[in-house]
Length: 633
Ligand code: WT7
Image (tube, rainbow, N blue to C red; front, side, top):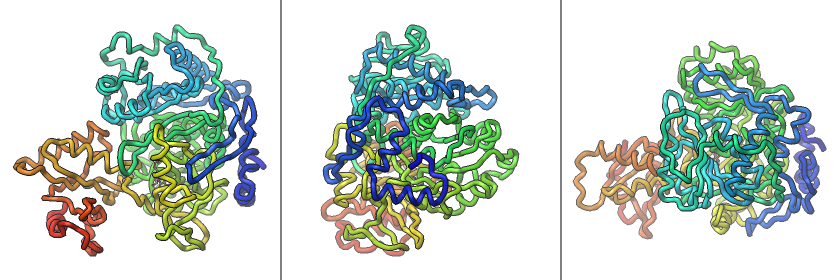
């Protein structure tokens, strides 16, 4: 069995094989990687206990597979083309040898400051080469990286640092983002006021703006790098040793630190990158995500490097200096595979087509989409105007928890169907469940999407709370992994993901839990309670609608100021991405006798659908529904 899937027969036989003999199947795939010592068994698992162990006792280091292994033949090949925020500045080509030595040096700096296997390192950086170098430097020495997206606020950063007791933070003096200059270092300083675990902060100089340095804690990375050696022995890792933690929103409570381990993640991400993007030796691949999300971890850093690929690493945003930036970069670097999010496609499709038509885009072979369902209009615009009807679109469905892509067409192999993520990749067994928690059989059906059998990159736990992991993903449908998504399956077995069925809302491709947003709103001294729901939005996919009630005796004088303050609270606690588009003040929230907010009513009102609220007989205060409906925005 080969690593590359080349045609439909190959896909079918790989898929069948992976179902009939999963262990043999993954054993053969895993043999494509470097291991210091082979595994003792391929898989042991228990769905009910949420325990998964892949390639146990196999010893490796993922950075050897990403870097060392390529040096002999591909040392001078470009690993990353860094494209800076400012289009007037030169891009930087970083070869595999360059990347290797930068990783080793940073790893040595980490070691020098006492970071060892199993310690947590928080990375809070813009999309600059040091971000990927930091991730790999941690992996080199077995430290567990926890990358926090640099758009998160100090509150969100502090809770993530605290949750995993990170010992060290890597950040920068600032970030360039479009025409803005962001003061990242101050955000870190602010969050560290409440975090006691952090001993050192390494600061990358990017903007060279003035920053304050805390003596004894903060170190300029540039100086530290001059003092260390170029070689760094990789730490030998068991396949099941943790590789990273990445936080994702939950429908309740604090963010969940999804924990991924080394071996299974490596095998799965390497294999799926190769096949979903059909990467060929001279291709130039570009994924526009941020490394702060799972897409960046798996398909900017690890997947491409495991395959010795060349990728573009883009610091900027799609609208700066103008709406042609993506297309300009594609022409400039002759990008062959382009992977982005529906929200970006929709926002660019709104602008004049002349931004696209200024560029040839002839280098493109394959287009990708990820993060939320792609609607028909956006799919067609992407296919016709960017791909010129010549490039298959891979609509890749997956999650932070799944580590890698689970359902996706294989370009040139799978028959495409707009808005459908189509078929499962080898090793993946999706099923749809009905209200009675039974599998829905046959085709042309819908239900809640579960996965029936483990795949190598399934998250192993929630950091510090295995019980929550079990509860969240393995109890609703005993014996299955529950994704939180609804889906349908057409006559030919293709899957279409219809969206979340829980209280997670996907806004511009960002996964937001309603609970933390409500917590932030409720911190406002005048606010009693709030409920946040989603409503459809042209560009963002979904936007947020907040229903908010005052504390007793509050004069609701200046509502406009109050609305701004609420959004400032949210920005401060979570980040600007979680701001509300609409805020409605209500006398109270519709609640059941047991005190639960009846969100489905609020959802309908937010969507402007007043047709049928269903059974509201369990409501304690049914009269409020009329009021909320009449004042809806
Ligand atoms: C949720 C996971 C996967 C990396 C980025 C998001 C939604 C993701 C698709 C798609 C329809 C999609 C799902 C999923 N989603 N990709 N191709 N079609 N929906 O990772 O932040 O963990 O979010 O994103 O609802 O559950 P995430």
